Image (cartoon, rainbow, N blue to C red):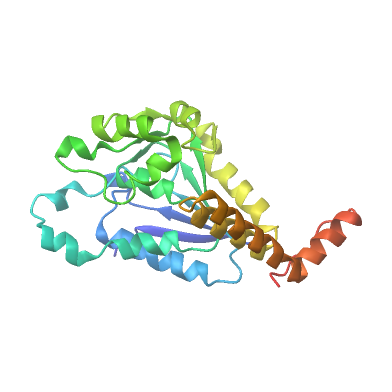
Length: 258
């Protein structure tokens, strides 16, 4: 039977869970896994029943990086022609909130994958790192960009130049993760957050994610103008009126994404 390398399940209440499933190789991110993951994110992005997405590698490991065997013979043109950036773009361009549930190793491409999420819930066993330097390489999917934006130049530079790993506690102190929980609670907590988000207006969630992602690379005044315009636009949605009315009536809002 063909190996099922990614499992996608509906958890109900608007939440979908994507689980990497290559435990024998610590969920190494080979080309086929990245391709399937991209296809799933594209499908969920267009799925009206999915309001939030949880991404996990399971209870033991998130993803220990790329498949090193592939690096032994690959040439520049081989890597270039793969255009693997399109697989990452499918995650970057997903309009739904993404919560990464990280247990065990999140190294190299695994760390970069976690950083594609909007929220990272780390188990106490989680270990983060960009060890590419140790095999004569460098990060190639955001490790020198997203990491620097998340924790600042000097902490990030130490990680990418030394290849040293950091614990979940260190990652939390640096601001790389959103929160740290017991390992047995990591996925449960991520789903809990996803269900909370799924109960909000999907239009407002999308606008927050879009403005935050675009604004980080803009001059402050331009980013503030972008935020202001998005804020103003939301007043024309039915969800905004429903939210205000529900608040005043002291009941749960019934958001419809309209």
